[in-house]
Amino acid sequence: MKNIYVIIVFFLCGCSNFLSEYSQDMVRAKTVADFDEVLLGSVYVPSNATTTTLINRESCSWFNIMDDDISSVRSEQASGDGSWTARNKYYDLHAMTYGYYTWQQDVTEKTDGSQGFTDNTTWNDLYARINYTNVILDELDEITPDNERDELKKNRIMGETYFLRAQFFFILANLYAAPYAPETAATTLAVPLKLTPYVEHDKEKDTQFTRTTLDRVYARIIEDLQESVRCFERGEVVSYRKIYRANKEAAQLLLSRVYLYMQDWENARMAAENFLKMDVTLEPMGDFLTSPFITEDNSEVLFSQSSQHLQNVLTAEAPDFCVSSDLYRLYDAANDYRISFFQRVSSDSIALVNKFPMDSDVNHRVSDVLMLRVAEGYLNMAEACAMLGDAGANTYLNALRRMRIGGYADQNYTGDELIGHVREERRKELCFEGHRWFDLRRYSVCSQLPFRKQIVHPFHTYNDDGGYTGTRVFVLKENETNVWTFLIPETTIDFDRIPMENNERDSREPLNENDNN
Image (cartoon, rainbow, N blue to C red):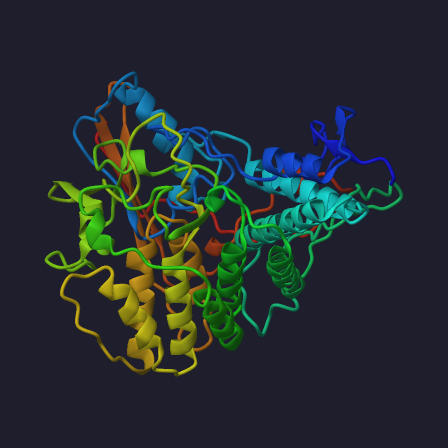
């Protein structure tokens, strides 16, 4: 067997970090067990302690602050708690998320126009993890296990690795490429499809990195997820709690979601049907009225990586965020158990209090951006059926609602009304789990029943003493298209002598600005 090197420090400064040269700081990995450790330590996105800010700027921490489920809070005096003064909370929370929350062309922009952070965190982090998956898959292919136990372990590790590579490419494609439209996917530029375990670099070439078309990226995602399921079926059955590591159920569920994003309704239905045949179950939400619903002990949770970012900043107290009234009004306050997730703090400010645990500085493990749970499988199945004109969608919609709404009576919808109810139920069920922004972007290009809406995000400003100074109102208009796609990081674009083509993204000014200064 050839020497196997797994990179500990993956990147060097001073060039395009996402595919840069390897560091000399290496550790030799020789056995199947070695690669299991590498996978755990270098590929999975860690779950860090829940904090009262989003300042840690993890690669996916901002997924829930761009959509219509969130708003900001106005108060004449911003509050501070514990060691955080009002000034610190404002600058650490809002000022660092301003570019995402207000859909700026340059998402690193702060309220004063300066740059708050670099724009390559997500890009570099996910490509670093993809590079590790490429190394692991390549080197595991060279290993002949000594015994049946190692053979089973090897298949399980490969199943996890294929899943993670697929998920990371899926995220990248939905950030840096236009939404998937079947009629244009073959010509839409997506992201570089890096599949080799080595660095390709030809100093004679003017362009090192090229963007692969969206259809090819999605084809690879599907291939990886299908191979992941096959590997898990051949792999060892683990005894530990599976939500900490990828598993067959998670791979099958994500596959059904990918087909939905492609508007491949028939394959989405088959993938979701195969998922629902597995050993998965819905939890009756009536049992969670006084305790957090999404925890590591909830059997609905299939897989989670990354942190819980938003729970402790949806307090509905300035300068934090709040749940939008637009979302809150969708729930039947008298009968929907999910209303217990929310608490009205003032007449126009609603807090998220009981969907996730709320303790600060506690590692809850269950993420609010990269978590998969059983309810999505029912919703994916319902949507695929509804889009195919199959009234059987009601079966899955009703099954979910019976677990969420007290005294629920089954309904029987048809046509566009059925699609509308499925979409609304998806919003209510999966809010603040990293879905809504990506659902809105795919609905905008849905050929069968497109959906676009105007979103208004007020941004309130405060001075160093926490006093309210004004409001800027930003509007995402329903006919906008390039707001759904982010600019490729400047460091990547600038690396080549002839740079890869970047995306278009409009600059944005507030609709109006009320300045009390």
